[in-house]
Each structure stands twice: as C-alpha cells, then as structure tokens.
Length: 138
Ligand SMILES: [Zn+2]
Image (cartoon, rainbow, N blue to C red; front, top):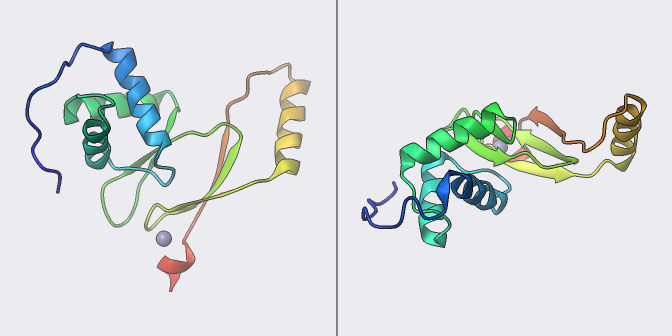
C-alpha cells in the first residue's frame, strides 16, 4: 500500500530523540490513530523524519512500553497507534479503531482530587471506553 521511498535523507540529522518527537508530533495530527506504515509514509510526506519503517516500529514499541502511545488492536487490520492524551477521554471502536473524544469535567475533577490526596502532581492519564461504534454495529 505504501510506495517505496528513495533511500535518501539525513538519518542522523535530528537524532533519536528528534525522531521520537517527530513520531509523537505526527501521531498527534491523527487523533483516530495510524498504523505503522501510514505513519511512516506521513513522516516522509511531512518531512518530519526520514527514518526507516523498522525505526518507526522500534520507536512505537518504545513509546508503547513507556505508555506514551496506545496500541489499538483492530479486528480488521494492522494495529493503530495513538498518542496518549493528557486528561482526555475517548470512546474507542475495537473494530475500526475510530476514536470519539468526549469531555468529563466531573470525572477529571475527581481524579485530580484523588491524586492530590496522595501527593501526586503532573498527572498523565487516559480513559478509553472500548466498544463498537454505530457504523460497525450496523
Ligand atoms: Zn467502528
């Protein structure tokens, strides 16, 4: 599906940290998630990072281990990768991987209070309700 890319570019130009940031930035532009191949193509198209597909996979695995990206296993294709949003909530379709954001200020308020009671700051959390979207249920 993804066209072969020329082996040009400057692999070391932005360093591994820069590549990580580029991957996260690119994922941030695709709220419903991207599979690794499409992410790889998007990185090249945007000039974000000219890195190999293997490197994209390695970075995604690392980010997933660190809980910075969510891996969404769909029943209809490659897993999708999505950055973990701070204090945001999503309904996730486990068939097509579609994400429907919603807000829940009362939940947020409660979570922050619980964290404060335990002396925790700089919170990072996500709340994903996995289900089947109306389109896939039809
Ligand atoms: Zn769906």
